[in-house]
Image (cartoon, rainbow, N blue to C red; front, side, top):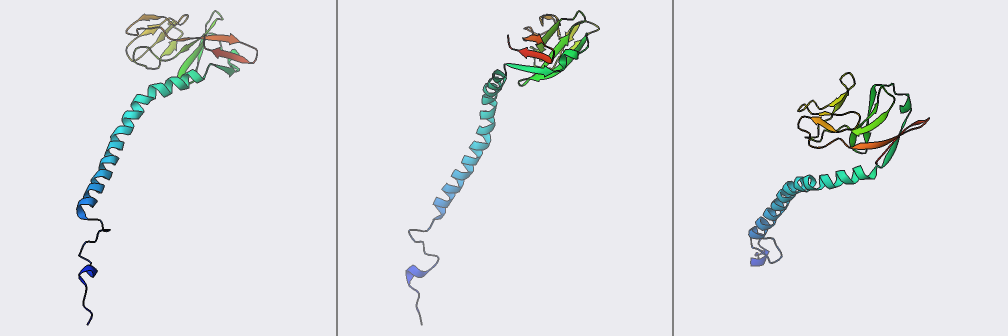
Length: 161
């Protein structure tokens, strides 16, 4: 009969086989790496978001709103200027103004109320002057950002000042 040699036994560890201790170390290292990535990626996105947002907002310097010159007096047109909601107001006296539609208090979207002649933030009751964007009352600490407006025959050009 064939006798098995001590090195031929499948239960005998060989130098090139992975032992239990090495396997556990590799498995725990892989689990720890996945855990660190699962925690680290959201933290990275949270910290990188303002930088990406400001870079995207800075990329847009002007835009033409086609046929916006036909907007009736006393009305507003909401649009996105870069990544921010923006409003183009055609006042009853024929003047135009473009302002960000983001409240400077907590970032809520504001709305133009032509019958009261104010821009109102429904989140905390802040109000702004629709002719200048200045904060009138409530918690907003700063005025709305104002953009330059140029009305042409084909549209309205809104640009950074």
